[in-house]
Length: 556
Image 1: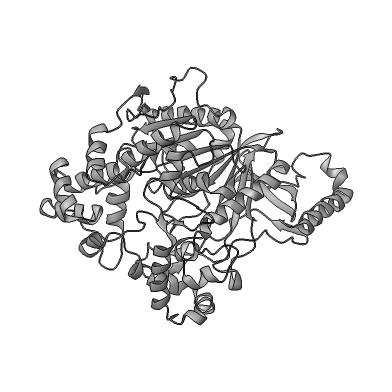
Image 2: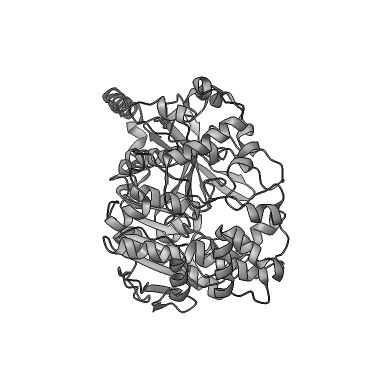
């Protein structure tokens, strides 16, 4: 941040304090107006002043909500495919009672090849209990969705009430608009000589905003935990490695972050993929490629996305038709700027931000990711004779699939068998390696969640599916929870709340959860209805996947 910007912010704060001092002394976050009622619920306004201006939020069911707060300038027009800039100030009061549009993303629900959401989407939301406190621990939540879909509209009210913490949920650019690299984009910035990774830079900019502004909400900028599920967990891994994120957070929670341990790609590979995308968009002239890419409609990027980045072609053709599985084995680039080295090498060598880390997997990760979601996107159930082909699409090699079919034979439900292989290959084993690597350098806790989640499917037995622990952690509106789910939710909130406060999940009467060690024993908390300490997180399956080269181990 330049000195002029810092000085301007200080001056603005001084001027604001002169005319707001009277009522700022009366309330720690802001002024409360007369209550209104929405849907039978009493809702009151609450006001807070940040550096950019005044925000008018809402108090709902004992929680203060400030929604749709800009943390960066809109990445539109000439700012597309560039690093984010700080947000501009606004005049007057800004309504912070409703969510901002989600970031532009593939519209998968309708089956059309196009986009939904908006390119102007770099906004965050703040939620905290409606009671006076200072220096609350802060959780910065990063949504999942394979870094291709999703938004920051997580309902965290129950979590903040029960843990007495403050939650900031952020949005970041997605898919091509977030991660497209191109030789022309790289060349236009001589200071960096890099392109791609814009979504990670958005998250870093959000953390800078939290550092500078969260104290006016009553949060502690010196006690910030970053956390994310799935693609959001992968984002957390990236922030642990990114040099520019140094000092912006103090703990990290990775929930089912499937992409953390896969090899980071060189920028040249990303540029090749970006050049193919540019060609699909008609931007074939290198001399005008940047101008051309910035002139194309948002929808155009999502119409061509499946044709240029399809990580599982066998699955896509056999079970999806024109719709591929979202995601891939990497998508983050060693660009020499955001990421100077491969993530696995960084974790193994200790070249990451050595904060306390909590890592989780669920027992049936793949049941929802590769089972239920596949069906929702038009897939047909896998038959026994199709099982080897499905494994080929998952693992990318017919020879590897043949060996995997022997090690993981098809059961009564081929779809469940396939999903369970995906659980081990994409989540359990990579996370066991990640935990062993980080534990050699920083306190690390690993758990495997084995309580069935509240979602149901008439197609597949979901069990402890991908995201089940997150749904119970934050609370879920639809349907009552079973007693064992309620117990798991309360216990998980206690562990996470203590981890946020102290950098250690232990305390109270809960089962003592030992740190992960740096060996292959994968000591972890077996988080069933009655948690216990266990070792050997799918040791046999992981040994097989290491042997065949799926869980790739860089030189230690």
